[in-house]
Length: 88
Image (cartoon, rainbow, N blue to C red; front, side):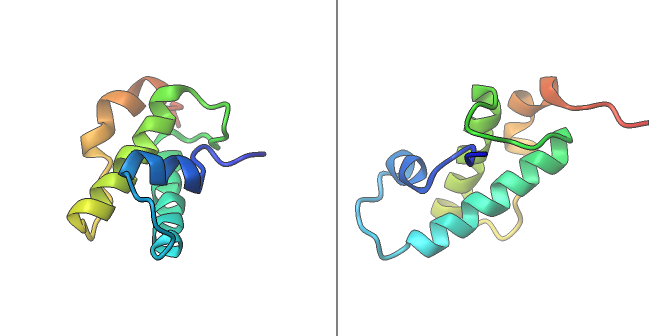
């Protein structure tokens, strides 16, 4: 399975052209992916719906640009809500 967001995609989205922060960006991708997967109850791949992939990228952007210490799903709630798996 391929990751829902690659390092190259995230760097393009963030407009980062250097390699100095690749490790940090990859860590943010992994954390954002885990957050979105936890919220929706699904495993994400490169073929996941675009709103879920965009949610991962938006969380990465917020953490990278704003230095948010907590990765809240609230800013991307509208994109992930339709994909939540109901747990009883």
